[in-house]
Length: 168
Image (cartoon, rainbow, N blue to C red; front, side, top):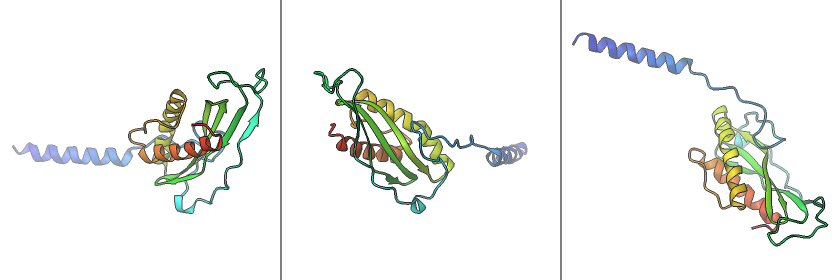
């Protein structure tokens, strides 16, 4: 019975030391699914306002002569950026590329997070959200558990981009 308090104390000390020495992986400067952004930590309140995303960009698809097939897969390749959305842990916006009415790519050109943990969550959630959008071919996707605010911001920006492209 005399050893029990000693073991509890030793376990507590070991746990405390473990927490103090715990290190997360370093934050990378690359943003998932995008080519822009800095990945640097920034306070959501201190983030400069983003310029309004420009009009949808259009380029003819090779060999399609601008005509869409019955599934909407043919036609011009167009891209549009969604709005920049402030969420509890940062700011993000989504860029969508479509061919006809088919979503061919989704990226995040701007992602700024408030702290490294938020960056890690976003690094994991954004590729999953992208895969869901490409599979569903719409913005009607499930959010990622543990990344609720990131998921909501992603879908909100995605809706805005798809609205600009007149794609449902």
